[in-house]
Image (cartoon, rainbow, N blue to C red):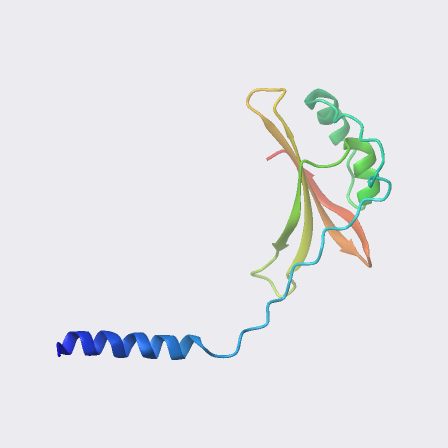
Length: 128
């Protein structure tokens, strides 16, 4: 029998045994918070870039998720992001983004929320 084949088969067996340990616990991401009044309600059309750009100057740190939703409507994208990973106190943010392709080049408004005892409040927002 070919000695290289024996080594390869032995390596495959060791690799399989090493990977067959107990499954690691997978911690799921929490569900995105539900927006009150949005389920089953009538969705209004998203305002255009010019209107949102003007309204964005009124976004202040500490505003609630509901206040932002009332200003701009539902976001086009929503997700979680970790901030401050290289510091002692990293925190999880909720990020909402509105994409505006009614201008060229397309623009994106991003609002970052921080959890404040169960209420998502604006940490910062910008036009990246």
